[in-house]
Image (cartoon, rainbow, N blue to C red):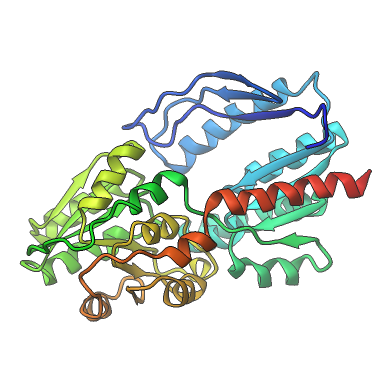
Length: 363
């Protein structure tokens, strides 16, 4: 940044799961940076709960920025309304807007929400998306699969593509992988992450676990709006080779990764998910374990071309999942080229330059 610059970060206190609370200070003062974390009401990951939490966040953000001035607003949006909030702040402060897009909400709600709600919701959210994108000076897309959507809807908008990346914690852990280790059966297959409609674990794990009884033991770490549905489906299927665990902090999660034989990923069988690139793939790949992924579209192409010793199957297809499983090599690999290419520090340095260059060019 130019000399004398200051970055004002406004975010939330950790709040993703009501069952897992991580600690963080409400205020941090670092050289050239102030971090303000807003407390949100606890939620169960449902749409109504999340809407209330976002409304509380928005009101507090608008109050926070009331007496401040900014040259540029950067909004990172895994939810459309965060992009809209960033656009509103930029408009009020007559600032440049850099949008970092991590999901296409308008696309997703057509698949995930009931049709009666999705029809009206799509019209409303499409207008909000259009307003936010037209307000943006530049857009970053976290997945190359988003390009066609944005270039066709918003021709002429300035676009970059800086993907998710691998954090140093995972890179360091991967460097200590043993050269060889003993594989015992049943194999431990680990999934770690959100358990929601988007992941569709309730649509694949019960049948898959039943079919692979004696060969595989599933450990599922996480929480989310469909964890209850998954638990009920497992009971109905009568399987006992699946363990559901609460979310873990990062150091415990890395230990769990290292203890697994195979890392499992799954997205539900929705058209909107053919464009996404799950961030989980990057830390999975860095850990050197075989990757077993139920994904399609852009993510499937990425896994097959970029991640050595991986197997892809069509989402929710149990037979194809079993067939893909048999193609995996039961050994750890050092994916050095992948780590070099997708090291988060390097990607974020390039993205930071992109933001600063935008400011310089506009002055």
